[in-house]
Image (cartoon, rainbow, N blue to C red; front, side, top):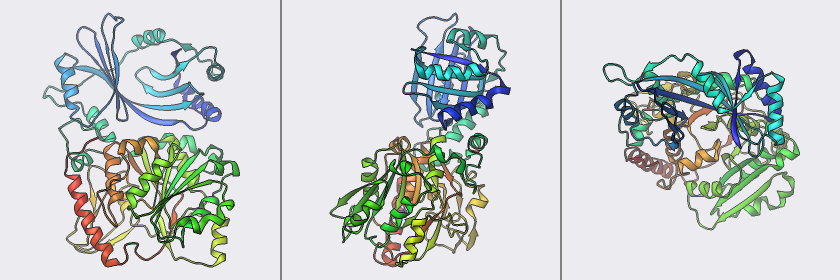
Length: 526
């Protein structure tokens, strides 16, 4: 069992990716940033960042057998010192570059990473391969088709040594860190310049510019990552998903929400791979009594968890997440109707980008108890073209209650003013909103490992508001992008305030804003 490699000519790279796409489905797209530093003795110090994970390797010259390679998770704790330590040891020059990697799962124990624009051209790494294994032979057949030779690590190193690599200074003569290194830290939320302890300051260091992924996403799916065109041609690439629905006194809407899941434009077999966890957060009438006679109408399994007392939205969601079983997760409210392309659109994005939270916009609609309305939902809803979501446009009144205040009335257009949220990083505020406020929990999707790093939803908040924004803030601080999915917007069924009245709701919101700001200014622990 060992890793082997292939060097892929630029003219062939896209064709090789397409062949793997055809055979193995969608890859994970990841950015890699490499700093290969050298000292005057020819020793090498390799620092490879894959998102926020860091792999550090020391190579002596001449090469010894005890060279150390140690993967670590990079905490957001003044990484400037890491580079300062390499400088003090004489590693002042380096090869520096961004690398785009397509990671394909090609069997139980086999993964192929196709990396583009490395220091040594385009390199494929075949990980943990057994030369007699059927999965390996199928991968080898693809490379054979393009007459690409597979080589071991020694031949790869010989090839790299023959290449001429442009070197750059890690620090300039004034002691300033190379701007390329600082830029990568901003892209993934790693603070390379100072001791950043509070969550608020962490947010000021992060760019939400997911543009790095856009070209690859377009090539792999045929559509823009945040655009309005559907990914219909990728219909056979749907992956199993868990849907967590928290429910409190919403017996009049929950069936409509469930039928909107059933009406997804998926095959019956695909619907069987949907896992719905419904958490009844102490409703006056148990939700199970409302849905039990309809359970045979759904192709997916529904697991109902009943909390005898109301524990709040965060607790209900956390219990649902903990009880779900798939890597891909959808969180939605019990008054949300999904258009028929929703699950496919979010599934494809989560497969390709593992470090993001995806959000769709909403259109408000009135509740309707007529059977014709339910039949329309069962038929499958189209994504609304016109939405009334605050991320499209909103009028902000002078001194309106919010996370931030504005001294004058203003109309804001967040998506338009931020290029679909790409320019909403570095702690920027628009009106009373910031980037974390764009993570709105009535619908969102993300990967389980993203949730595990964020430690789920906080129980600091009581009543209405701010638990989503704080969840979003922690997601962003851990290097995750907030990306809109405009090809599949949802319907939100209007209803009276769950808090009992608008007055109580406003009071709860004000208290939770104070808690949110207090938490942002506390020392943040990973």
